[in-house]
Image: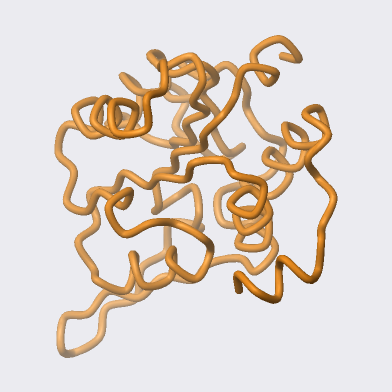
Length: 175
């Protein structure tokens, strides 16, 4: 895994079941609400502070998603909502940032994520992903979705790169 981690320059995430535990609350108005883990969010902020590109590819359409991700250092144009063929959006993300697929770590948990899990440099699944996604992944976290799968994996990669050191002055300016 060390070799795959060493090439990573960007992180791309599915939302439901990866950044969240997969639970969705529906309001009477039809808004879908999700819960994000604060430690996962801090890990993504650390990656943004250190210059890693961040992207999200989700079938979800709620405008609360890009709003939350912006608070974690994502650029609006790198959040793909309503994605039906995630591979197309993954290729667009790579093209926009001049990245080769092997330079991108992708986090996914279900059947629509499998093509990207196989195409990227390092496919990651939470411990509670469906078996088919786990079989396609390079790394299966010991943590479930929405419960620090993202944080622990980002921290492992960034520690290997020597980039997991927080500069609080930079943090306070960015966030």
